[in-house]
Each structure stands twice: as C-alpha cells, then as structure tokens.
Image: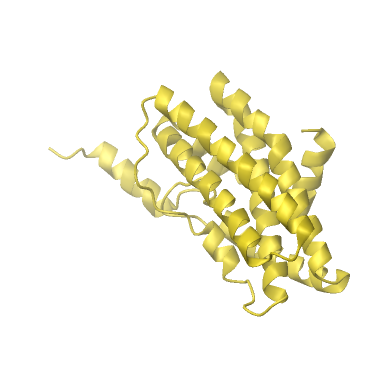
Amino acid sequence: MAVSALDEIQAFLSCPTPDSWVEEAVKQENQDVLLIDHANCEKKAASTALNLIYRYTDNFELLNKMSRLAREEMRHFEQVIAIMAKRNIEYSSLSASRYAAGLRQQVRTHEPAKLLDTLIVGAFIEARSCERFACLAPYLDSELQTFYRSLLQSEGRHYRDYLALARQAGGAREVKERLTVFREEERKLVETPDSEFRFHSGSLSMSKRERLSETHAHPVA
C-alpha cells in the first residue's frame, strides 16, 4: 500500500494503536491468539459484507463492492488458517473483543440512518485493522511480516469503499457528525485497557498483568 494511503488512514483515526498493545501482540504467548482472532475477524468481515448484500438489494454499487470485499476477506481467512496449520495452531474457540460490538452500539436502528452508521463502522474497523497490520509487521517473524504487509493494500481499499458508500448514503453534514461520534467511541475502545488480548483490543489491564506476574512469581505446586 502506498505511504499516502496509510497516512490517510492514520489521519482518519483519532489515535494510533498504543505501544503497550503492540508490546502485548508480539509476545510469544500471544502469537496463537493473534492468529486465531485474526481468522475470526476475517470471517466476521465477510459475514458483514454478505449481510449488507442481502439487506440492501437495490444498491448496485454496494452490492458490487461488498461482493468483492467478501471474497477477499474469505481469501484472507484461508491464508490465516493455512499459516495456523503450518504452525500446528489449533483453531480453538475464542471470545470476541468488545471493539466491534462497542462501535455497533452507536448504530441507529431506523433507516436510512442504520445503513449510514453500519458503513461508517465498517470503515473504522477496516482502517484500524490496516493500521495495526502496519504497526505489527516490523516486529513479527518473516512469514507473518510478509503476510501482514501484503494485506495493507486490500484493507486500505476496504476502508475507502466503506467510507465512499457512507458518503453516498447520507448528506455531507450528517456524515461529518456521525464520523465525529464514531471516531470518539473508537478512540475510547482502543485506549481503554482490556482484560484479554485480542487483535482489536486495548492493551492488557494492569490487573491482568499483575495476575500473570503473580502466577509466575508463585507457581502453583
């Protein structure tokens, strides 16, 4: 992805990923979780695109963009699980982070506001994913570094597609107002500590770190 596109995404987001989250993400004990949750995110992204296709059948530009997006997200899913298989990582059950659900709590329930807000949520999720791939890549092994950098172009395009569709769905003033609402909510979700590490989580809370430290200092007999 061109630097200018990544710069655009970084300007779109209200805050960068905290260094503390990157430090958690590159820890060996979190590598399996990172890949499993990444696979889950790709599936959910494809599902979201398909749901939009089923719900808004009269919007041909949305149908075309979401069809392409769904195919690409499933291809990414296939790539992630191939890496997991190579590394003998079991695709076990993993709870979702509060990130996407937190954003969707702000989505209005009446149309056409619901469509506008849903598309804005998609733009933020794709933008943050792209930003985190870029943050992580330099600190990962060569295979994951190459893979995550290969995703930047498509994730950046997905962000732009969602944002363009949102701007078609609402007037300039409404889009600006809703972007402000979701930008603030997204910042809170990113900067507030989480109790569990996930791809879209905040960094681990101090209480979680303290519990881990205590466990290592006083192992169970």
